[in-house]
Amino acid sequence: MKYFFIVLTVFFLGTTVTAQTAEDSVKAVINTVFTAMKKADGDMLKSCFSDSIILQMIGRNKEGKTIVRNENPQAFVDQVSRAKPDSLDERISFETIKIDGPLAIAWTPYSFYFNGQFSHCGVNSFQLVRFNGVWKIQYIIDTRRRQGCASQ
Image (tube, rainbow, N blue to C red; front, side, top):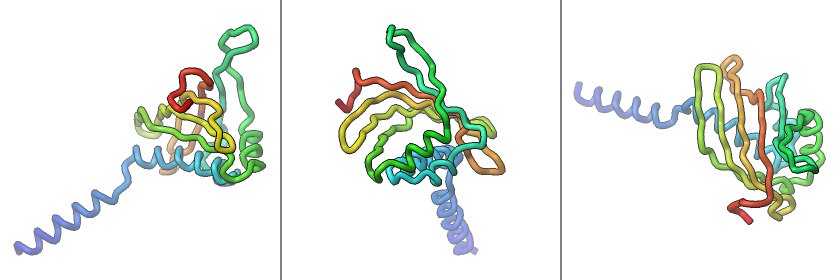
């Protein structure tokens, strides 16, 4: 009987260690986006997105005023597909992830490199929705700047 409890304890400990948390699965989808970019794999990229994804960028216009620019998701996928493998390298860190049922947010500071050269940095804000147990990215908005980056 004593051995049964030891085996049972080891089994449950092993199961918990290998189980993926909701936070891990959110991170996995986001990491897949950047793997797809690095590999120039548009199909892999598109698989991370919901059917109604919204992409936006916060920047400045010529007068220096803050603007929000909408980006076409299919054009982004096409651009990634046409890139040379390893030419698009966005390096992120996960600062914050919050989850409430089928909704998740992730805040990921990043540095972007094009053909091995530093280009810009900023922060991505992701909104994800869990459809039938699978996380999909619903919304991405980001900032982009060349000044004040840790990677310069």
